[in-house]
Image (cartoon, rainbow, N blue to C red; front, side):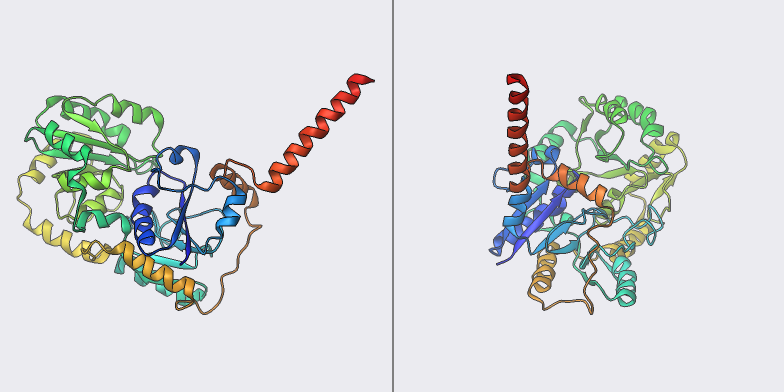
Length: 382
């Protein structure tokens, strides 16, 4: 039995890490969550959150699963990267994307050949981490034996659509690639027209003002959904409209039509338009079903990005983690742990994740308050 820690610092972490938690518990492992206050409110009653440094130390994690690129340097145990998206085309992958190696992880669990091959090349050069191709746990819900089509939100969406095509609009958050502001007026017009039912989903880090504007479109023709609910809704979505968001790659695995707006690196299977005014025309063409060649391109692309369709990616990640912890899987040399590197940022991250003080800090704080009280009383009596 191992102790596994799940780092949930962003909303997108939950649908990625929960399949891992379920699989770990089924195997008899102990599981705990390290989450900021905002995400802690979304944890289920059975999901245990560590709240202090003392609890973190007592849990004694053998490994920590991460979805972010740069976790706090002070996390316990072995560090396992499972990634927060499939998209290889947002940025230069070796400088800012999935292939950027900073010496922070002992194991990389990759999605498919597009990620596995390049990372294994880096692993051979460095020798301080290992790479295992596992697939992505978030995708399990799309291909498992029991896809979540019967969830309450999915049933509500199907009822609200009343037979109309269900279209999802989604956008990334960073201004160079996000088209959410530019597309707002066009999406508003299409929502008001009412011939399609819209699922509106923006990245959790999107600017609050633009999120509010899209939320105002909610009504009989549209609903706003968050990143946590998105995986369960993709199977009932008939077409996707987006920009350079990783949801495009997730939707491509289902072989359904995709319209992109100014994609950073458009692929042959996408209908990429250079302006929001062309969305309606492209979407009409996409929903017409006349795109056999695009389907072939999409299948070929999906095989390189994420070839697994068995809903067992979380199990493969746990197989790799168990092997790493047991020592059956190991890199040629140990990873150097630079705990003092970026110390200030790490301290800030850990404070957000562990709001309660540790035992020593709590004791020192109480002693300081007591001394201050006695000192103030002494001044008063003088």
